[in-house]
Length: 145
Image (tube, rainbow, N blue to C red; front, side, top):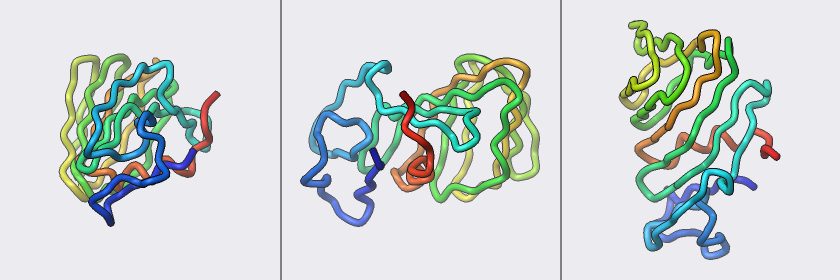
């Protein structure tokens, strides 16, 4: 399933399943069980993301990364927030490196230069984008089984 962003229009996709949290919807409330959320695996197989909600102005996902996995330097066009539930690692934001652990919340401004190195255990986090645009990068990921 490909994620669709309605950034170019104010209305949700007329063909979209209104119960699918990966489809933006400004008009309907959505309740999603994690076990039923659409999930995708990174091309390298070391991370998965479950799409919990995608609205007109924000995205919420559950990110899981294998021990030792890394996110290369990149920039996203909107603000991003991550709240770590499990695991440890180091995140570099605009050249400043921070240790992260369970209970840590990270804010990244739009267009910040960001990279991440996971520690020696699995990392699980909630991920929020202020806008649906960055979620398009997950379209290249493989649907998880």
